[in-house]
Length: 111
Image 1 (cartoon, rainbow, N blue to C red):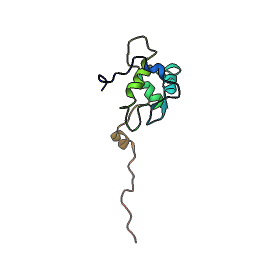
Image 2: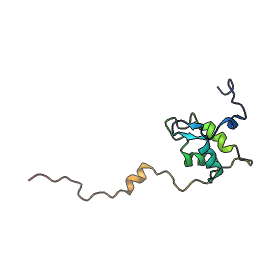
Image 3: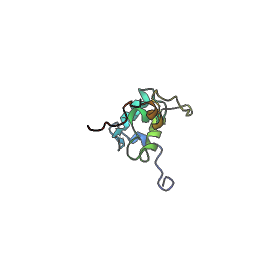
């Protein structure tokens, strides 16, 4: 599709700050630019963590390329992945192991 209908190179200049980039999470181009310029976001992954762009029902299939291009617009050096933010995913097994097992697991019989 991209070969048949290429997006013009200067398309980010057409977007106003009120233009919705991520429809699922209602993230605007202004929010993406603010995360890139005012916050410590240095790549599209960190913009996603700060704005939730790409975390909706489509999981970034619609807005992912746009967020990536907007996040990379001000970068002059080559892309190098940044450190992750403080939060990390936890597996369900780790959560299950962290719960204390109840001491009275058997139900009491009626008398």
